[in-house]
Image 1 (tube, chains in turn orange, blue):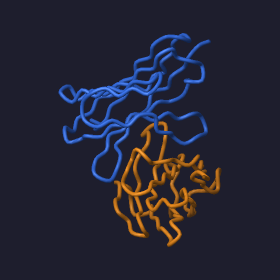
Image 2 (spheres, rainbow over the protein chains, first blue to last red; image 1 turned 45 degrees about the vertical axis):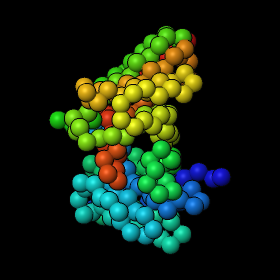
Image 3 (tube, rainbow over the protein chains, first blue to last red; image 1 turned 135 degrees about the vertical axis):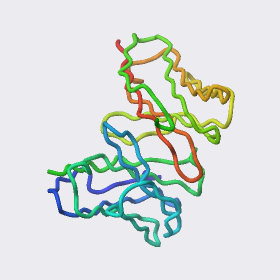
Image 4 (cartoon, one colour; image 1 turned 180 degrees about the horizontal axis):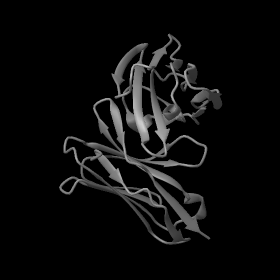
Length: 113
Length: 109
């Protein structure tokens, strides 16, 4: 079974631009969560989608948004990029709400210049 | 104060040693606790998943939860150089995970 895939793996943007990251979950998984990982703040929860609906949201500004498609693939968008948005963005999928069966992708490394 | 506290290390030990990794948490409502391992340039992978207090063993790994002191531990026996990674603890709160900062572990051959 294929794992969670994320594209692109690396991205360089400049301040003020916007970016869209993509995540394809494990086949059959309906939940997709997004996380931001930085050396200073560690792993922080952005939001979770389940069956195309946002089920939970972390404490990030509205510049961070996401969506999920009917095939469970998910996208995350960051508008008006800031230097502090430079991070590893991780996507994780699970079947329902069983965190003991949550699997992470390799992440997208975003650098904002 | 963060809800889950973890010393970022690094923690360096010789091969074959017993490793003890620890986290503390502040929210007594947390009931599910996890340990993840993250290698460089990879996403985290789940190592151990425990509910409430007690011990859980899986091969060389033992996870321990002490709810009275709000303390969670991961023990690694017979540590190997391949165990060198960052270890993250997490607590489940409703539909999200609250993460520790991660401890970088180095096993010296």
